[in-house]
Image 1 (tube, rainbow, N blue to C red):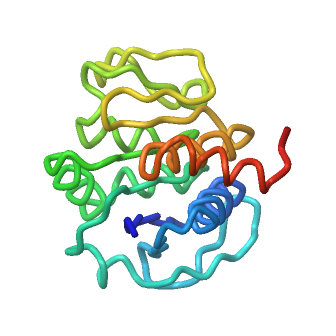
Image 2 (cartoon, one colour):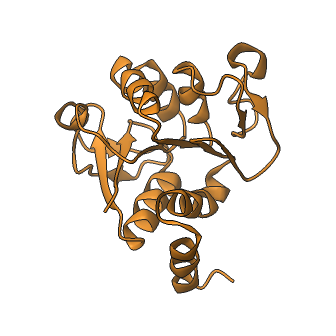
Image 3 (cartoon, rainbow, N blue to C red):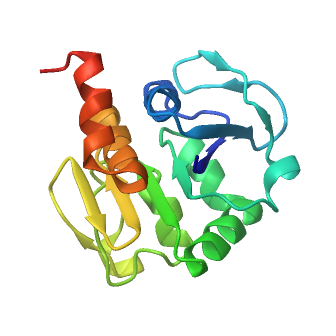
Length: 182
């Protein structure tokens, strides 16, 4: 089963982090959440999340996808961490999926992964001229192996899009059906 890394920074958006991890695990993916500082993560709304491992323990491993939750100051913390940028760059060079939601597409931009790509993000999180992305007003945008999501309100759609990319539309639809969203 494909493995997915979800780096968690202090101040991440809890809805996004938990929804991503939950939906991907429902699909049967092996999801590893990793705390940047090795401590429990206090989210943007004060909810404490306990990661599976510290980032330093997993940063040399290969994953089918790296998925970044947004939120502030979490996304800024991810963007400033050279380990995260290095992971994203190496991961993209392998042709694997990189995904980010809300403010976190700015982290992909910092790693140079949005240049010439269509992307979405929380309004104001991405400076189109600075990173060469073409901003699209849509809930979820896929361009090649880069997937971006607009906001916390789109976390479920975003996570299901990750499932579709890694396991196919049939698995995505199966997971969504069991969630009784429609």
